[in-house]
Length: 360
Image (cartoon, rainbow, N blue to C red; front, side, top):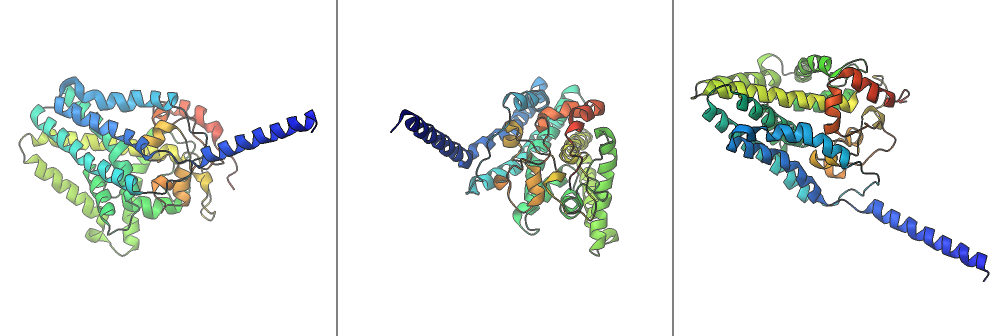
């Protein structure tokens, strides 16, 4: 065998080994335990609410300031991974997130009761608790809200959304948003010329009215409409709370933390579909949702960032969602996009050049 031939064989063997190693890397699933990182926020908030004082700011500092840094330094996943086969650990994670949310609320109401006045530390507790509700509980409610309506998971999702005064979300999200995403009929899809602040003012009432129309279309009109019923129950809950000792402080805190949670949820809606449009007659594709493989956002938000696959396959659980390499990609994770998004000119300049101009 000539030297040239031996060199060729060695090269081919080496390349084959590289391909095999690469293929194995692509096929290996990530450990489910990485998603335990998502519990850091609610645990910090519970601890802060119990300790009081400056500790109540731990959730704010972690989500608004540490989170963006972690999004950046942990980078993005570049190699596609095989979907996980076992769903049991992830189902347990979902229930843990959902149940922990109510422990977070209990710790907050305890703090508000003891504080007894609208203090600075109550405000920081409100912000931390609202951010925990958005980053942990609402993410869980979004996932479980896609289960069968009579299932326990679905009922937990509705209870979570009630706890942040946004009961109609599951109906609107499932029956309107997923059907009409990126069209003029979806109030949860942001236009390219629309900034986050104007989107908030449009989408929040728009989604409530959309949910009302969904139920009206099913013959549940007037007081029989579940969206109106949810609103009535929320008002009743506020009335009952006002009769409790220090109830005024708890009610104000609950309403403000709910507002923080809702605004954060709608910020996520904004960045997931901003500027991506299709005609009402066009088939929905992976091109109508923004994605990111930012590790910190993926792991702590239960793969919420693989949003294209969620819209293409809404019934698929989060642990089996796949990246769509050809879909629009955000320049950073959900945490890191927060501050630029609050300044619309910066956001549009930073992300606007990534909008596909032909999604057909």
